[in-house]
Length: 241
Image (tube, rainbow, N blue to C red):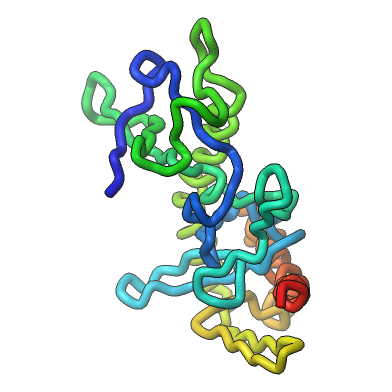
């Protein structure tokens, strides 16, 4: 059970957080949530897919980390970080941290603030990165965490508008992913969506301009481009057999 508290530089002055990734920190998962601001970096290494909540009918974005349940093919204990990729999704980097909201004096507005789960396995008194400088102020590591939390915070607000426009132009389509491994095992991933490239290409100049002005056109192409990374994931899995 989580033990989330508001982070502060008095009570948590000596607190540290382990920066590496591994199964012992809950990173052995086959997919994680990602957000629009990450798409350009994500497309270089991961397969970006959309999922739909059957209750709310809203879409969200994930990237594939593995091809089987509880499998993360990017984990590598031989690396210092434990993660074999140049870019790590913000939802992974954040570790024990999360965004909370604090009411201002008027009570009418709320400001995002950082909370931490004190019972998270990455939280330590001995190992890891310090959260605060010796004489006050946030450490570089905490500043890095704050930037990643901001990606999540802004992404949650931006993604609904992105999916609304993708839906308006009928660009979303289901995709089934079939993977054949060297050991003759066949894996089929269902329930995912992607961008229909033909429909994207067929949009009018006015529609393309509308997508581009909102910043969603390059994101649509990033999703399409990312599908080639399924081959990369398959190769990693084959090499681990």
